[in-house]
Length: 296
Image (spheres, rainbow, N blue to C red):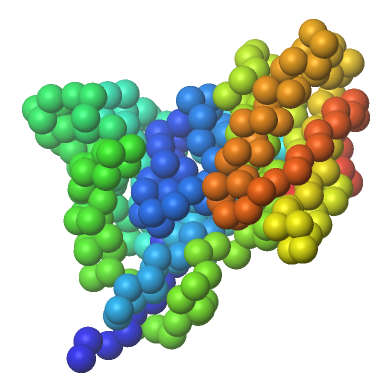
């Protein structure tokens, strides 16, 4: 019988390279929210992949970028902290648009940790194979990566190979979480993130980046087979509130309907969802508010 192995694996990279999509594909369920907009993930999200002889604990992290606010500083700090705490790092880049100079800066920050690093080349479905080889050649000059793994997180191609390879590198260790646990995030956090995802998908310009979601009430009503949730969407300007609510409340209703369906799928129950919009000026630069919202 093989010795049991366990380890912490951090998924790092620039914004919008597919880190959350990869985590969801690995787990086989949606834990991290996704959108086509960069900087969707704001904090470290833990996902657990169990097999007969291993427990692989993955950290999805915010995209590493130049901070423009205290919130962004917190996001970048969260990503690098996950790198220092990991047994293995997966550095994601895109096959179509590798950001070699930016990734070189990330590597310079990670090097002192002496943690093994894989280069994961995502979105290979969008390029020819020859392009993948040129990406590998370019990155080989930056760092002695332990492995180069091309894959498509969206469709799953190459993900099984990634998991097999990761398991070879993680150390022998205990089972940190029970088999039926997929994440350490609270149910409130997951519901809030699903609401925020719909805002990212439905709104434009500065709106998504000026929004936070706080769950005011989260009540399971088993006698009604119902989960009742009340949430507040926080924005920084009155004009943003008006856009989110929309003419006759249509935008807010659309966001609420889509979020409710997503939450119902995750929790396997009917959901009653109430949404409110509140203006809190400059919340993304307020240390106390960031801490209260979980971004401290």
